[in-house]
Length: 194
Image: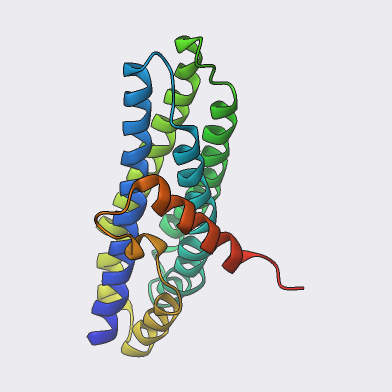
């Protein structure tokens, strides 16, 4: 039980961090609309780097390699749902890149140029929130029913082997500084070792 609660607590906390970043992106778009299309590009780039570096290289791969793999072994009916979630992980990476590409087209002198970015952020946020909802409403209950104590031990060990950089943000720290620090530490930790 302790390993199950630890693993699910970490996964849930990481989902909250990802959701906070997506909400932050939407807020930056709202602010840009209020300021004639001037977007806080450095902060948005740091948020994009976070999504590229943390969910894509740590959170999702560990879900697939540990939680999903073990659930497939224990529950013969879970395969189609888990395959769909893995497909969504791949789609999410493409949607993050679509946000990055749309950001390059924003021109402060042309507020209409903000709309492709706004659309890309909305598509990303909607897809990720739907994805996390599926995980929390279907995968977690199935895992609670089917995984064995040794399975939960493996999942907990996998998810305690890293730290979500957003857990290290101080309440008074400006978001721009926090994301710059987070992006730098993530890029350093995920760089290929020579």
